[in-house]
Image (cartoon, rainbow, N blue to C red):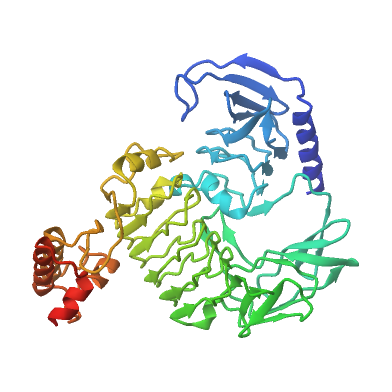
Length: 512
């Protein structure tokens, strides 16, 4: 690791000083994914050859037999964003490669035939998912020896150490633990290592970006957190029955023995699946839910969120496979890819307070039928395949058709036909009693939709109406929606058409 760190530093300095490079004109067809109109040159820097474009660079060859290679973040002022197809193919001595967080794609067979064992990645684990698993494929599949995935910090001044099953980074004034013993049922985090305070702990278990799965720690049952630790990542410790936090710890507090909150109870960091509850209400004091907070909670069917919630972290509800209902409160402003593998979630409504869905995705939400998107959203996700599940049938959009088309243009990696087969309803104003199409009017169109749903339900297809529409379709409160409810809609439409001013709710109350 020290050798690799030194190599990274050297290469970064070379990049910063704009070391001499050999450039030749690229010949033949442009690399895959680049339009023929986009010109590039081949640039050799150190042991790597790049295709250099106007705004980015791609690694296309490795010209070395060295065991360790560091890819710099910039070449000639352009960010290095891609590892090209078969770029390292045949580099049989290669055992470790360090990639900067500027990388957003790794081509097929990039490391085919290497001896690659370890990938060092500058970015976070979740960002690596889109790099290592484009379109649910694995460009590292042919790196037969790959067993390790570690993060590195290019500017960090530290040494690494190992003690009592804990791997750590020692800085000048503190220690950060990045790996623990997965097999231990009890872990007591030390307050000090080598005379320095332990301030950060990760590595209990985490999302494995190379394998594309969440590896949960089923061994850990008891965790003790000292006063010194102010940063902690314990995603996926689903059997964690007991959390003990030093009373003098300024950052964390434990509630009910295994719920981990910030000291002021405004952030919920961890809810363990071993609680076995089917429903949980997040306390009103909480304004943020941490990344992976509910990951793997397969028993939870319903999570009630507080009105003051403002932020939901990445993978917060990942693999809550039984969850069927969640309402995102108005006022929420940050929403990441929180719902991956929520297999039973049929409906999700984005509140108007959300404007940016660039990190949003619904991977493997196979029961998702309806997605409601407000007109306030101006940036959509670049992972269009995150909505490619066969269940998605309807998107209700609060803006105009023109605004929807403009929103689609924000897709960075859009398919030729985003949302193919999905019906997009524009000018949506919200579902309400008897207003089943969200156009703010109660009329024959709503009655027709209800009759269609009732007919399909009669032959066993209960999917015409989504869960919110069903809640507003039972007008006579007999716990079903049928022709009788449609008749009430038509009666109200006739009443309103002749000058009646009562709301639908008042009208129904008067005729019962």
